[in-house]
Length: 290
Ligand SMILES: NC(=O)c1ccc[n+]([C@@H]2O[C@H](COP(=O)([O-])OP(=O)(O)OC[C@H]3O[C@@H](n4cnc5c(N)ncnc54)[C@H](OP(=O)(O)O)[C@@H]3O)[C@@H](O)[C@H]2O)c1
Image (cartoon, rainbow, N blue to C red; front, side):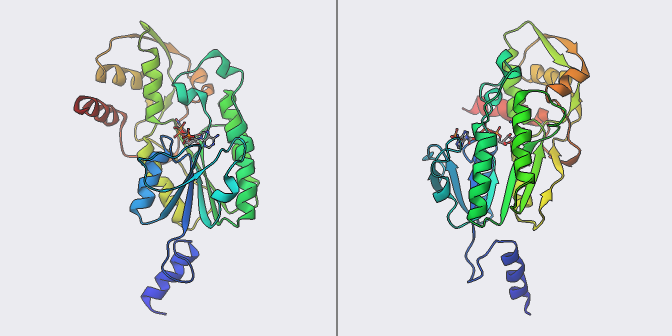
């Protein structure tokens, strides 16, 4: 067999080309309009893949195929899966991430319609549509975290693990954008109560690079988790944030245990390369340029 046809065979097996010829197969990204999804989509396009985003409303600035629907109701899902080889499931309904801070209600409940029922619905229809790879995005340390959102994410993840699909689960540590939103949310307070817990938050661009590798490396199942390059306490991340944003606030240390229960949990495995300090510098530079 020639080198070219051997390469084509391998790529066919990994779903990159159709068997009939050199035509790229289709990748559906749920959550393609979210923080992580917006980093995944351009990487897929740059690598030459055909991309379809499943979302509640299309965004004209993102030039891809759009499948409009709703994971919470199942509307539009079956049509969205037509001809799809790989699904990257990066959709979530997280009130904490949306507003960037924890409220008392977040200790009581979190919506499940997208992350549990929606994931279940998506799995069933992917099975029906013979999807070849279901790559599910999840969070490091879900077993230890006690917030209802973590329980919801764990329930969704279990559906994936127990499904008949060829699946992969990638767990990531908290994203920098969420850490920034959290600190910005407490910025008006003179004193910040923060846990001593060490962890390694990560940039969505680093997670997207890793996910795109995982989507096409031919492997399936539990993948190495991904976190950022710095192992620091939440307090140290806050100090760097204050320095970068020219703030001076007192910090009251809370216990490491409480921090882990809140989801400040580090990842062992793959490491992103962009540090928190670099990410903050970029944000400051972008704000000056805007
Ligand atoms: N944020 C973190 O710190 C963190 C850390 C580790 C892992 N993760 C995981 O990474 C993934 C992406 O997180 P993210 O922070 O990027 O999320 P995000 O910015 O909050 O984006 C959520 C996405 O889900 C979509 N979505 C929400 N409800 C939907 C519905 N009913 N039907 C269809 N789509 C819906 C949103 O689309 P529209 O709003 O445009 O409809 C959006 O694209 C999630 O699985 C999350 O659990 C997040």
